[in-house]
Length: 87
Picture 1 (cartoon, rainbow, N blue to C red):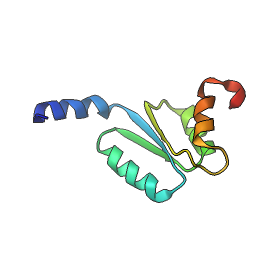
Picture 2 (picture 1 turned 180 degrees about the horizontal axis):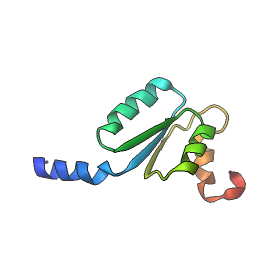
Picture 3 (picture 1 turned 90 degrees about the vertical axis):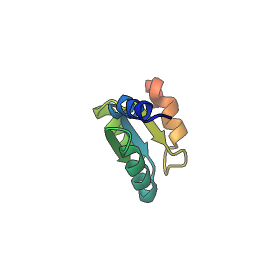
Picture 4 (picture 1 turned 180 degrees about the vertical axis):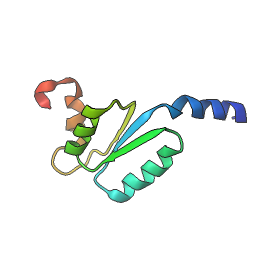
């Protein structure tokens, strides 16, 4: 990859916002640091409830979601995105 195309790719993704949902603080920190190099805004949540509050307060272009969360699973939450009855 040339330097010019690498810069252009970074600029393209820099405007994106990301939400990381994981109950492990270490994983949140690693992902936030790594993704923060590419994306302008990275939020973290430790539970579905916290993630839902963040998702209702801002738009996210990408959500990285742990499927083994305490309480409600990430898969159940993702399936509820389009179904208000499951929310």
